[in-house]
Image (cartoon, rainbow, N blue to C red; front, side):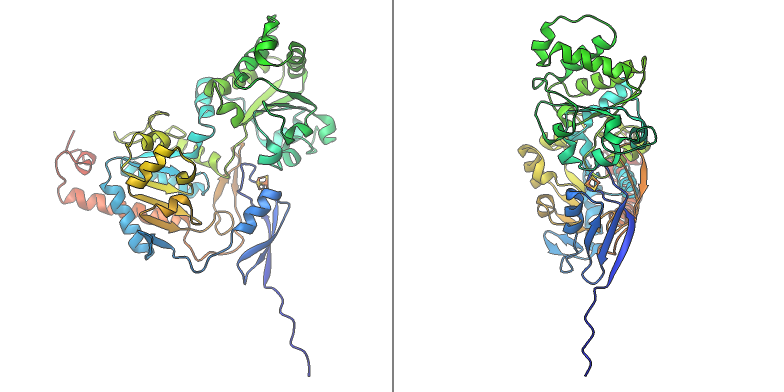
Length: 462
Ligand code: SF4
């Protein structure tokens, strides 16, 4: 009697898949997928963070695709409830967007425009100050491919990419071998400027440690040195960096072939904020008098750069945009989500692929508990737990295709690994958009109360 054949796993391999865990958006993943268990069993080329991202995303077949007041509901009913909440609100806000596709992001902007709401992304709590600095100072920019092929001086300022973006060094900027950098790290000088000695210091040829809160002063001193000005030696005591070290760095910057300044939240979210980012961007501009120099923020979430791009195409501004007057207005501090919640302005919230309920200030979280919240997320979070309507959606990049932007503004098309039983963010948002449109038309046609938002939208009340 012959033995029963051993059960072999029903697997497939997906080449050139994309990891969307961080802003590096590595698109050289080779994924092994167990189609029976609907999970990724191997992610070749992924770093430790990427491997955890792929391993974590399993499908919970028992989860309901939609919940209303915590109880299972159909997607259609949840869409109806979400649309009604948004249309009824006087100050609805949309927030999140940095962990979803560009296709979903643009539908979210359209909904917010239709309901005269307020749209903001996670940029407002990470590189928002850089967004302000770009508008004020400008940006000498590049792609990471150029850095790999050309950069011989790489400066990381206020970040720890060895732990936050593990493949940034190997794929793009430190050990990567390029056309004009065939020796990889041997052909580059790596500088780290940070208030802490992190694991990234191990990759650096030069480590400068300014006093906390003195980045602006150090950047301004470097600008002066690059322009040939003499500095008061007291600047060393003020910044914590020896004058000789500043002079050495200024000379290296002026004399390199292709220099790059990568900057992180250690620069943008500390004392000085957009002045710090602006000083760094101005330094890069100054250096173009002598050589080719560029600057780029190191972005965190997988598609936060896409969120900046999409919101900018559609409204003219990258985040913190308000449509209540029927046209986009940009005012960080007023229209950014921590502020609209903490002040109690928002009376409904549409939160997409983000968890402000876990990481916002206490006052903002308290207000989220007091207003109807609609969430789209791949898993249960602190925010989905307080939601009036919660949609469970497919994971971008793993279960859905679509477009994401790498931190250098290069768009990348994703190759999904396996199908999810849950709808995509884009599908849910399109359904909400359709229903919002129908409700607005119906309410308008039915005669809106004078002074109401619907009437104002129809031009009946000014
Ligand atoms: S560096 Fe970032 S995008 Fe690349 S594999 Fe690691 S976590 Fe994923």
